[in-house]
Length: 336
Image (cartoon, rainbow, N blue to C red):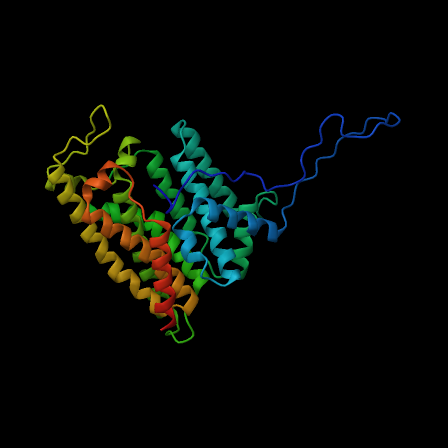
């Protein structure tokens, strides 16, 4: 499972601070009596915590970053905190190492999320808890993401399309609902529990669309890592196995794989058609942000469907210029 736009993380696990003192740094002087060291927990100031999360977005979220730039600073910081924690969970799921160790790490993340007070030395949890104090974000939705990543680690596969959609709701629909808590509804949108439930359903659908696009984009990469997300029912329907040869290439006939990918892409487009109905319910800048992120992924899906062979050979991506054009159109559309 991948959070959109993952690239290697150059961000340290600990926020920057004074370099540790080395032997010889102190000026010469009279000998001092030894003092019993006192352990003082590091407390990360909230502004520093948010800057750390924004740095995670800049270095890890190539697609997400194009949309988040369109938000007002408070919402941009809040979404950065949400992304940074989601990125942490996803990295645990994708890490190498024993299954038990990764499942234990996911449970530790769950414990940190549930703690009444966050670890003051953890910039992501500090920013996340401040975000929850400022916006009505349902932090419990992150537990669905953790559950989905635990399924990844355990090597879960999906029999039916409904099973796959359930997984997508866990790992991406949950992020859509969390993001909606930051966006809120526009002043002109209908109010009340009914409107909020409809918006949450649409945010969930848009998350499913994005994750289905990820599944097709990362098909070969995931298969080389031993992960298969496409439903067994669909593989049988198109006569595919997704087996690899010694060189890591798919052994299925290319024309069968192409039909399978185009079929799944068509299904994903249906989720986009539903999920994009969320955009008119949001304020102008939140609508532009959502339209930019969804537009980038929908264009990526179109490229995959147009040339399945390219997607099967490696990860398909858009150029920075193409992403910038999608973001510009999102701004123009939101202004209207």
